[in-house]
Length: 289
Image (tube, rainbow, N blue to C red):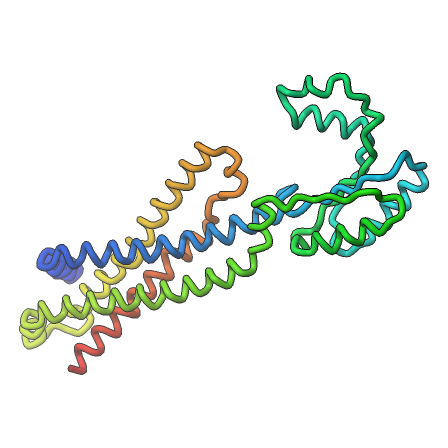
């Protein structure tokens, strides 16, 4: 217990000798971990966009005239047989008219005198999330069905975000790699500077018989504080911003999902390990010198 007290005392002494350097190192670790947390949210955002209705690309196939039930079943079967299709729903003209009034909202009175019979029947086709980028090809194939008069779709911004899922994942891996390297380098340099500034004190303690673990523990604890502490602050910062955005823009609530517990643990433990690794390299290099 006494040794732990002295180790913490050495740690506090080292931090008070270079407070600005320690603060800058903590800020650098915080900033680096903010990038990693943002990567998790970017991947989660695009993943959610791939599963939302409309964002995963919805194709409307409008029919020519009124078709018999057997013909409708045949059309439904042909569309459902496509490997990219997730679901097919028949929208009769009356239901389409009700949707139009709902979409118009307060301006629904503009179509009060419209005869629903002038609207065409349609099939609403929803694609599987994995095939959101194939909407143009699917629409073209649906348009080749004889009874289909028109095919329309609107990608929208969420659809384009959904298509960018794999590029964002690859880019995110690159960002995480850059964060790993920069975090280890920052902690390495900070611990090395700390050891240089306290060289005489460490040499005296070594001559008095202090063991290596006693001499090195303050630096390892300092590095762990930079990594894990910066990660915890980054989580609080980004998650706080996410909560504010979801509260101000409710539509983002389904897209900006909170990080899972396993992801939070990874975000804290990974920089902690990397910081210890950087500190260990600095200690070894300084010992060899």
